[in-house]
Image 1: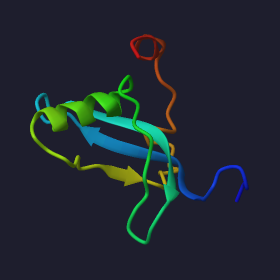
Image 2: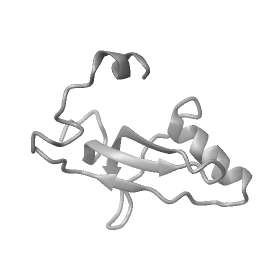
Image 3: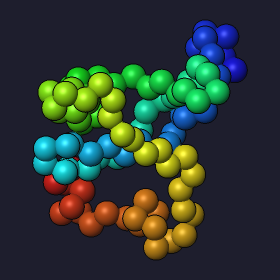
Length: 94
């Protein structure tokens, strides 16, 4: 643990999956999450990022919470989308 961080980080390179409740558009982002309690891992959600857009959409719909999924370990298989190289055309569209 880094003494400047202020806590124990469990989520340092996991994929945080969220979904916009109005459009059903999904997003996977990488966010740091620090263990704050036995069942809590807070993460910083900037309004300018996709996760922030999703939080705002859930709040505008009257929800005080947003469902998320976290993938902490990924596949090391070569057919995994994470492990494959992106074709030049699709990489430019990001």
